[in-house]
Image (cartoon, rainbow, N blue to C red; front, side, top):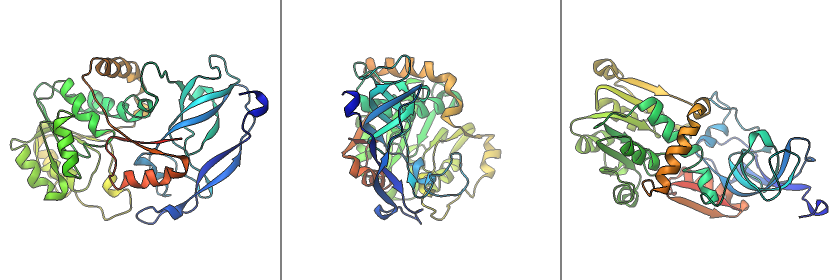
Length: 338
């Protein structure tokens, strides 16, 4: 692409209004915006894949959180993989692929310092948004640094068929867990967890109280709970803890839509079992990134780690993909292909 044909505008999704409860298509609009000139140290990127993630629901509200909310009437953002069209930064050339944080649009001008190269010869580009991206890193850090899996541990994972959860169970096994149990929202996902992702047991949380189903799957209790859901799942897990168990808080998708907060009403069991509740932000633990690349890259190459993606086509379908993901219609990582 010559300098004369480089795009000067982009199509970007904007947040028109803050959702009340469940988000809807009416909260978003696709608008044309001007692209700034590519300055020193910057790249012009044509996005090819966009990430939509549960944490984005929190950013659509203005309540206090671990990340700044989206501004109303302004472009949204998120992780993306794109191809460099023009570079004013050393080490990057047109044709390179990069992972960056200006998604929800088709083109972006980004600071090269915020981008990482993605090699399509090493892994398919969508993988850099999932198993080799923030979701895979979240699973790895949560287990390695916080859960600290010991040989023979019984591990329970909520949201186990999602982008993070589907990796957690497999990595826990690779780190020495003796038994891994997952919950998911459909019988098909339960089957996937056991037959494809190596879970020892799984259940559909819609089929009965979580505490009862967990007790059947782990009659002797659990040593680690990796939580992506919160609410009823968290309360059930607290009730099933063994001595010196660890709860790792990764997400609470059950409460992202301002729905009634459920539990936990049994926090005293943390004292009874001398257990820990641990929370983290993967961006504060990036010293583990080299270990993550080495271990996860190696497991993928050896066929020890598998992953699923749900891919929707078209920038115009980005909000629909996000809403479908929030309804649990994805298996593994939800990605939009441009």
